[in-house]
Length: 218
Image 1 (cartoon, helix red, strand yellow):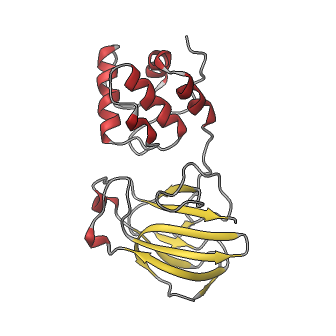
Image 2 (image 1 turned 90 degrees about the vertical axis):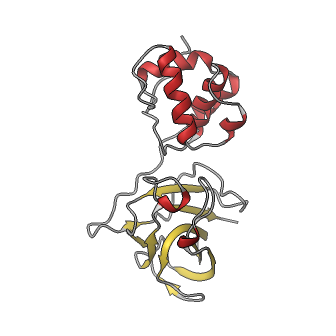
Image 3 (image 1 turned 45 degrees about the vertical axis):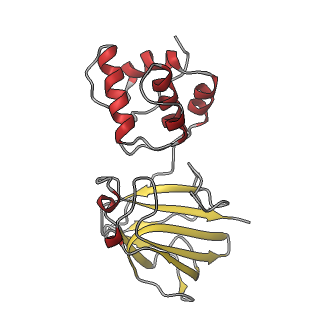
């Protein structure tokens, strides 16, 4: 028995160091690769590997990491997997505002780095496509970038429009917008609408629509 406490169900779209631990365990058990465990997202391939492992136990191959699966797979965790598992902490859940909008938080516990943009530890805030996104803090829109969602994207990679806001507590980088409601140089207030959530199906991962929120405090 591994002695590692079970803390949450991991399923498609889950993200965190515990997902990396599960992937390492699966690889050591003969399902997947250690290289794939560098990605903290539970994607289609990882769900398939998990389902195959569940068949081998055997239990119902749901593709979701539950207590029963944890009891079996955690025995395959190496030292790094155990460290990754113990590093995971719950992410602040941001509830939609009463009107169905998504209020981005000023302070949050990051779960991963922003790929290709060092210094912006980030969190993903999941919401339905076209949900109105509200600014996390008063500040100035100092850069706009990204791509038209109609151009698509790649799973785990960039898609949709991006917005940077320079604020008193740091600089925000936000991406995966379907639309933007701000202009370069515009002053925004916390709670002001800045855009809408892009439908993740344009990146080939339907059902995982979210805003990637990164923040640099340097």
